[in-house]
Amino acid sequence: MKKSFSFLIGSIGLVTIAFIVLGLVFEKDENEKQNGLTGIYDVSIDGSIAYVAFDQGKAGIYLPDGNEKPVIELPVDQTILDISFSKDGKKLAYVVSDKEMSRSSKSEVHLLQMETLADQLVFHEKALITELAFDPKDSELLFYLQAETFTNYSPVAGERPHDFDVHSIHLKENEHTKYTDLKKYNMQSMQVSATNESVYIQMDDDEHVQSAEDVFASKQRIFEIPLAAPDEKIVISDPAGEEDLYDFHLLPEREEIVYQAVGGTGPNGIFEYELFSYNWKTHETKQLTNLKEHASKPVAGPDNRIYFLVDRQFGERQPLYQLYRMSEEGKDIEEVLLK
Amino acid sequence: MNQVFQRFVEGIVKETDSNQEEREDLYEELLSHLECSFIDYKKQGFTEEEAMRTAMTNFGEEREIGQQLQQAMYPYRREMMLGLSVASLLLAYGVYLSQLFVMGDAHIPWLVVAVLSSTALLLITVRPISSLNRRLWMNSLLLIHIMIFFYGLLLATDVYHPMSIGLTIIAGLILLLAVVLVYRTTIYDYSSNRQPWAKDAKRIHFINISTGIVIILITLFFLWAFLLFSSEISPAFFLLLIPLGLWILSYTSQMQLLAKQQKKWAYTIVFIQTAVVVCAIGYWLLGTIGGMA
Image (tube, rainbow over all chains, first blue to last red; front, side, top):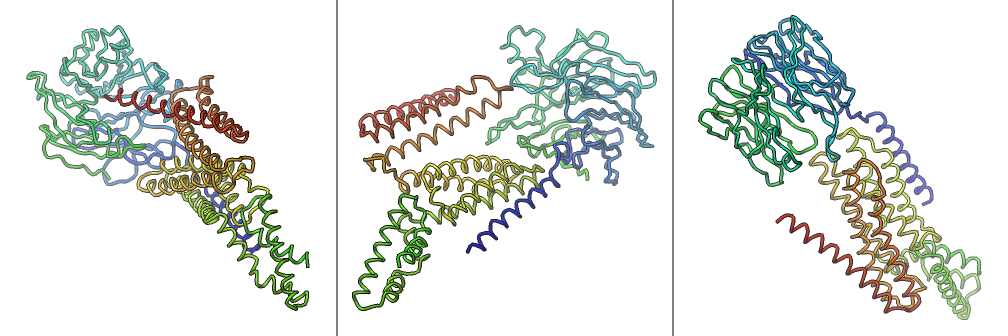
């Protein structure tokens, strides 16, 4: 009895020590845990899709060319914040920053030549560059959104990049231009006009707010900002709309915006995000998707199809993105298999 | 003869979960029973050696008798304790490995304390230590075990679905079993000799343990919310511990008053304490329902 009891206690001790050793060997750093597709992708003029995915925490740019290896792979402590194809599809710009962003985080903008896969550092900045967009009129002009601060403006909010403005770099002349001095709380989903000298950006419609209540009541809308006169920006989404608009893509030939907004609330209380279209001539709004999940990031492809992401695990710890496409009327939704 | 009987009785008593005082009473009773039996056999013409052997043989095998006494005095207590310790050990390993291989996190300090706590329960179940079988020690160990495995429950819920479902259910059952053992340890298994009114003491213990569980859960919820929204520890943090402190004070005073035969005052405090908790919960529920409306 005494022997068997000592054996039992000894076994518990040995098993515990073995598990501790296993823990020390197999424990992963926070930076090594991410896997799978991120919400960052772009579609080129020839229909090629470039996307950013994590493999054991390493962010990489993948091209669905049959090669399962990424064309660019970063160390586990860095991430890719955005990618953008040039109009001719020959260049892919991407921006690299720290995974754990801080006030001292820097950004590096790179250029990948699609034919040779040669990678070139274009410039680096002691600030966070969160989005890139090539000018469809000039493949040498790359626009970017730069945040001047990384802080939390509210004690209940986490630290985030703020004080955004629109910048550009001329790749040949290496000349930077700052177009706006708005210091916006947030800017996203930047798109450069194919016809005018203007950019389209989603941001808070908080121009005339005075009190904290006004700030909370302000809506997120889509603005057109003329580059020559940024103060003359105008709202191009429904100016009287009561809903917040998030990601969007402009379809100028249809005079429409495809945008993401809340479509409803699921049985578990989590918002369902759908894609809608808004015609700025007829002021007609149409719901394109009814997936009751989290549709986001609409991008127009060369085949008159709208590409978009669906997060199958929205509201959970890790997202699970899948790429879909549909007609501009929201029909024939099909999954695009990337790997 | 006396030494042989003493060793025999010690072997029986050792098998029970009784405390030192109860063991001494049981020891005396069994020893006297054996001695009477020995005298009877001697009167029947047995030699001293034969009378001693027959008395012990007819009494039964030490371990078996001890276990029968244990079952009679504390029905299913040992099985419950054994079940709690073994299930806790298996859950500790299961949660740790799931967290390690599914989530990539090695919760080594938690594994160590969970294994130590479960092994301590196993140890005092298989090899009862009389000096430890006091209500205070047993409840302290069970409460520490509950806190460790409450954290284990949170770790279990943290693992990806569907693995988290099974682990969470098992963790919940372990906590439930530990809480039931706190109730039975306090109310049934180890009653205090200081209390003249045993029935009233049981009743007051039951009410206080139930109130204590509610207060601890509410305090933990507010502590969690406080830590979630506060970047640093402020004096307000300690204000959250006031209800818990008041409950400990109220519980202690009730038992003191009951021991001093001040039954009326003890029940008055029980009533006030319960009314305050019920009103606070009612106020909070009304506020929540009002907020939702």
